[in-house]
Amino acid sequence: MAKNWQRWLPAGIVPAVIVAASVVGPNLAQASPKLPAKTAQELLELVADSTDSAFTGTLEQSSELGLPELQSVGPGGRSTDGPAAALELLTSDHTAQVSIDGPDKARVQVQDRLGERNVILNDDEVWYYDFREQEAAHAVRPAETTEAPMAEAYTPGQIAEKFLSTIDPSTEITVGDNARVAGRTAYELVLTPSTDDTLVGAVSLAVDSETGVPLSFTIAAQGQAEPAFSVAFSTIDFSAPQAGLFEFAPPAGTTVTEVPVKEHRDHDMPDRDPGTEPTVLGEGWSSIVALPAGSATDVFTATPSSEDAAEAQALLQQAFLQVDGGRVLQTSLVTVFIADDGRVFAGAVGADQLIAASQQ
Amino acid sequence: MRARPFAGRALLGSEISVLFRRRRTWAMLAALAAIPILIAVVVRLSEGPEPGRGPAFLASITQNGLFVSLTALTVSIPLFLPLTIGVVAGDTIAGEANLGTLRYLLVAPAGRVRLLLVKYAGAAVFCLVATLTVVTTGALIGAALFPIGPVALLSGTTVGFGGYAVRLLLLALYVTVSLLGLSAIGLFISTLTSVPVGAMAATAALAAVSQILGALPQLEWMHPWLFTHYWFGFGDLLRDPIAWQSFGDNALLQLGYIAVFGALAYGRFSTKDILT
Image (cartoon, rainbow over all chains, first blue to last red; front, side, top):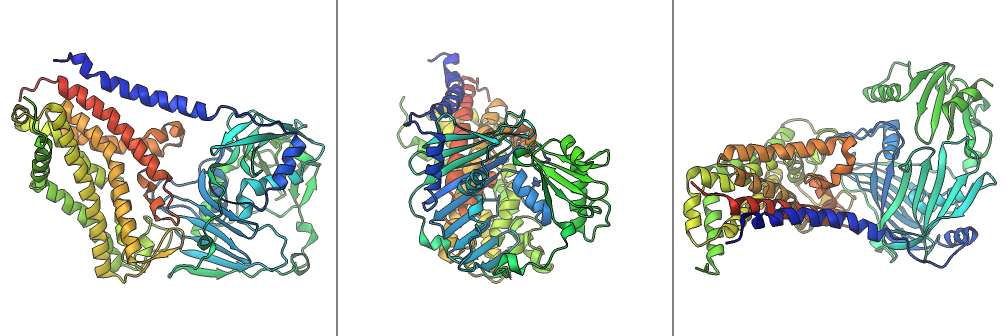
């Protein structure tokens, strides 16, 4: 007969094996792969050449902006109205299935818990579908449009392109350590602001070594260990997605809104009051966007028109801090200052710089 | 003396038949079946709920009765299913000890390991039956009270009855797998005591504790290790294409819990002095 302590052996060994596997596994996967060396310029060209590719992948977005979590906890309710919805999309973590087939077919499926939000681009048709709200929106893109459609603006590739197009002397570009992202080998491109006046610490981009498709995009904030914002593929498959995936018809019972598309955006705009135009102060990483007086005077004081508006107002009051001469919303990447006269200043800089700008 | 190869199967058969001959088991299944019935009747008698409010899928019921299954499942996962599983799993060993029948079970050439396996298998079968009860009652009562038709998936794709039935079965399987970790915990707790009520309460309470820990953003590092972490991931089976990731992750996590608590239960039960 086995001794008693021997019968307890499995109870000791099993947890030890699980812990060992969960510690060693990720470390093995993270070992830096060996790749032929490339200069930053060559990497930029690799990214530029990758725009027409087809793939399906799972995208993980996470952010650590130092804002309160807005996503509600229960399996049911989610606040989805107006500014709260936009904030929720930015501040909480999301998983999305992204399918791209060339420049004209794309589908992004934001996988909410027991719900899903879809943006589908199929040649000239654009659909938005929200299962929870049973709402859909439909628009037809004019054929000659050059505007980047919403769906594509979500992938690391498009975000990266926007960032790369703004590179100027204020940015230092270096090649980081090779990495492994979504099971693929990748080069890392690191953009560091040369100024200390910004909250942005560094922007890094992992580029697939074979196809040039950006696999992850991370913004680090000054003095914060965790990335402030990151979008990365956890899986990616470079074969063309099923064609049927881009065909969409809203299911019965859905409220469909037709969105009219402005044919010529620049000419059709009604003449705006020049007093409401935003101005940009400074340049590069530390630039500040300023909205003139009256833009946001009554955000905190107005009597809310509905229950949802009241919720949004309460949320804002909670997020903004009262300071001398106005209110400040401080996140690890972006600061917003609303002066008492309703002027709004925003930028990737500290609050004191915004307040200084408001006093000039 | 070596046990006959079929002793385990015979033991399992008798375990399951004892389980489903108990009035308590039927009462719990009836309570589970009452959830979709209650939801369907309330929605039928009231005005249609506003989309986006209340539990998931509630607003879709008025258009398609088949959604009652999904609403009922959403409502029963946090409390009712773990509660019934807690009762069955907590009773496995402690119940026999309490009745004084454990001794007689071990006199038969079954062996303690085999008895543990059979008890666990019985609890697992109950998980499947409980989940199927909720899903099928939901579909039936929904079809009786509301119009039914092709069902819209989360991605907006519409599937026919056949496709939907397959997805519902997959869902039931997912939820069953989700509950296996909890069953293993219940089995282990049940070997610790001869007071079945204590083991039942402890198991059900652990399910609640795990869900509360999972709701605290401060403990985010711990979340992927909680056995309740993927409980609501069943929605991934309702996408088009199906996102299998959470099914695999969930299965792996539950397997880990089964291994750990199975080993603990073995350690405890095989070294225990059985006096009753």
